[in-house]
Amino acid sequence: MGILIGTPKYILGVLLSGVGFVSMYLFGGGLITLFKTFDKLFSGQFIEAFLEYYIFSALPPTSIGHIITNAVVGAIVAGLFWFLAMAKRGVAF
Image 1 (cartoon, rainbow, N blue to C red):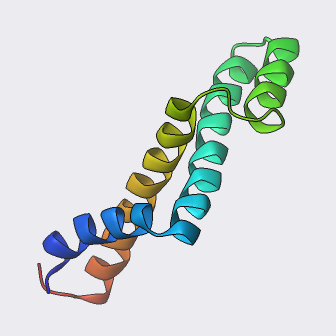
Image 2: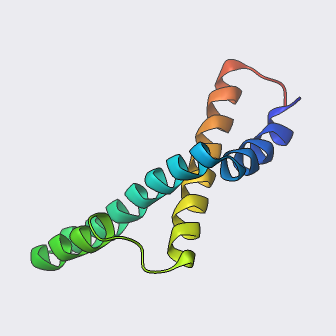
């Protein structure tokens, strides 16, 4: 199996497994929190950066969409990392 077929299988497989979904939810939530916090932090809005960090990392999700978005973002980024790691190993496309 080439990595062009393996990457979508990895992304879907990790989202459909229970442990994988929770792992990708946590990973995606961390990424989204960092992106939103760094945006405020680099613009000099330190109080807003702290509030953004607290809201996105410490509070529970408010909707199913929030949970699914975090998991999908985490799965796509992890799939991209998997693709790059396999390409570096020399696995055929």
